[in-house]
Structure formats: C-alpha cells, structure tokens
Image 1: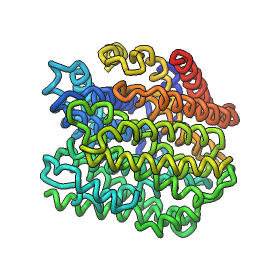
Image 2: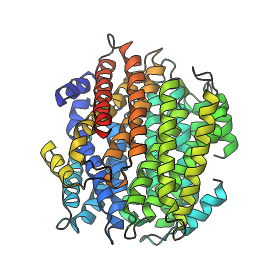
Image 3: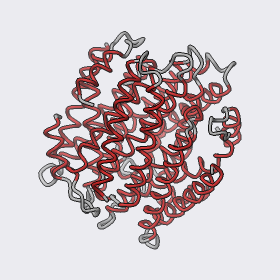
Image 4: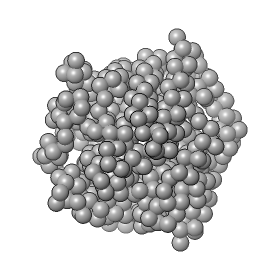
Length: 133
Length: 133
Length: 133
Length: 133
C-alpha cells in the first residue's frame, strides 16, 4: 500500500468532534510512525555497556509514539483535553529521548537517526498543538 | 505467577535516577494494568448503535494505560519530566473515558466497570504525581 | 479494581462465535498479563554486557503476550484459525524467551522470574489450545 | 524522516543470528506498518450497526501487525522458530481480517483499503517465510 492509498483512506475518515480532519494531522501521524520505528531499532542496538538508559528511553519513546499515532488515527474518539495532554507527553518524551541519543550520536548511527526522528516528531506535535489552539 | 512473585520481582528492580523504587509505584502499575484490560473489553462490547465514540475512547484508554504501565516498569529510563507529562496525559485520558462510560453505565456492565477502572487509575496517577513532587 | 470485579466483567462478556466464554480463558489471560509485565521488567534490567539478546527477546515476548491477551479480551472478533495460530506463536515465543532467560537465571532475579512467567504462559496456552480442539 | 533515512538506518543494523540482514525484511516491515495503520482506522470507522465483528478483528489485526513489525526491527532477538510462528499467526490474522473486510468493502472505503493492506501484508509475510526456509 503506497502513500497515495493511505492518503485516500485518511481523506475518507470523518472530521472529528474537535473539528479537525485527519489530513491536517497527516504530517504528525507520519512523524510518530517514523519515530516509533527508529526508537524500536535504537532500543535494540543499544546493547553495549553503558547504553541501558538509552535503550530503556527508546522503548518508552516507541510506545508513546505508537499510542500518539493511534489516537490521531481514531477520529471517533477525538477529545480536545486528552489529545492536548498526550501531545504534551509526546513532546516531553521526544525531548528526553533526543537528549539521551544525542550523547551517543557520534558512535552509533541508530542513535543519530533516532535523535533526528524524535526532533522531527516533537516539531510536528508542536505544530499540531498550535493548530488546535 | 502470583502477585507475591511479581512483588518479589519489583523489589529486585533498581531504584531509578528519579530516586524512587518500583514498590512505590506498585499501586499505580496495578491500576494501569486493570484499566488497560477493562478498556480493551469495553471497546469490544460497545458495538450497539451510537456507541462508536465510547469504543474509540476505550481503545485510546487501553493504549495510554499500557504505555504508562510499561514506563513505570522500566526504571533504567525513568526521567522526571517525561514521567510527569505522561501521568498528566493518563489522568486526562482517564477523565475523558470515565465521562463517556458514565453515560452508558446503566445499560452496559462493561461501561460501568471500565468507568470505575478509569477512576481508580486516575486517583493512583494523582497520588504518584504528588509523591514525585 | 480487584480481581473479583474483573471476573464479574469477564462473566458479563458474551460468548464468542468460537463457542467459548471468556471465563474459560481467564487463566490464560492472567498468564499473558503476568508474562507481559515480567518480560517488560526483564528487558529493562538486561543491560549488562552480553545481555542484549535476552533484552531483545524479552521485548518481543512482552509485545506477543500483550497482543495474545488483547485478542482473548475481544470476543466479538474471536476466530478459530487466527486464535490458534496466535497461540502457536505465543508458545514458540515463550519457549525461546524461557530458554534465553534460563541461561542467566542464576545471576539475575529478573531473568529467573521472567523464565517462570514464560513457562506458565506457555502451559496455559497449551491448555487453551487443547480446550479449543 | 524520509524513507531514504529509514533505509540508511536499516542498513546500519547488524545481521541477525538467523543470517538475514534487515534490508531483506524491508518490504515486509513496510507492509506490516501500513496494515497496522489501515486496521486502526478501519476499527474506528466500523461503528455502524452490525460492524462490531469487523471492528474487533481490525483491532486484533493492528496489534498483530505492530508486534510482527517490531520483531523484525529487533535483530538482536531474532530467532528462527518464534519468527516463523509469528509469521504464520500474521498470515492467519491477515486472512481472517481480509475476509471480514471484503464483506463491507462496497459500502465502506476504510474496509476496502484495509482489505488490500491485509492482502499485501499476507503476501509479504509469505515471501519472507519462503526466504527463511
């Protein structure tokens, strides 16, 4: 299934009671998806001595990103208060994971890519938060 | 595996950099676990006409509760800022799901139990938040 | 929410098209839940040198156990073929994770408890499989 | 993060003890990812009367696809037996969800796209299984 088909599916989803259609969340959905994948790989690759904290934070990042993405993909249940609070939690988790990965980005390609994926997800969550205000 | 064994495992986990041992999170961990199970069942049972919003919110609740629980079970990655933000998101999600389930609690036993599980999880998240301050 | 309330909720769930009520799955549901928690903790604790494979397998175990548990908690979607295949996948994952954890059970309390949780989940999946035949 | 960056990350992951590099799993990883997203949306849109079974199966499909994807993204834990069993479970779940969605594909765009995403994921799982034999 290519991105064109996914876009078509998103267009067919109803606007939520928050008054937002899913297309306006598309960039944030894709950023969460990419971050969930990058963090899952990074958690697995962080197995050298002293990388335990990075691995654990990446496991958290992957779960938070997957949950945030799923919430956006379910317009029937959209609710302004819980969506905003989950966007805040996502941004805090992105910042923490990004800071940790930044410390190992020189040595570990996975940490470098995961750091960028966190940074991008955080930026997209901020944009969506601004659009919801 | 009974609860005594689980407690023994939690006792063996190291205190996190937040300075909290896992035993102090035990009630919140169990409340998240129960809420994740109740919300998964409730989402599945909400299939009568007009229950779509309840089902969708319960799917979100189940994912948020599972993510919150897993973050507590990973002491290596504990981080004050992201933990607090995720506790806030959990409380907001509990409130939204509880409010929705309350509207159907008279007709649907699953909604009634899910409502109570959300209420309990919210209360335990608040207690943990207070203990972290 | 205590176990009595959870049991009451399970009793209120409809029998699935597979002709099984949820109470007959209760022991397996609880075994998956315990295994998902134990494996999440074990993955986090496996941060010493040489424990990367154990940690990675425990992450897989936690995701498989959570998915298996959720499938049982959704009677509307019960389907004999997919349920049996997922029980097989669960038993294979339990065996692999149990074998890996057994190698470190002497040194690491988390591995010892996770190994037992995998063993118990595998046994309960086998019992349920037999009951479904 | 675009696909080029994700590819670069996958290339940097070590070959697993199964003797397969992650690039050989890339098509299957992407098919699982797309299926998880499509099934999450489809479960949310299936709220009309009589669509409860479709919604429930799609929730199962989303969890199975996410778990299968994560297992591929963790090369440290790759294990031939559990990977093959999880591929079998994925194919069975794809078939069941595809069959259910096919019944509503004329009326519901989400069911039509989800059906195609399941079909594609099943095909990619079969190809990977063949490559592993």
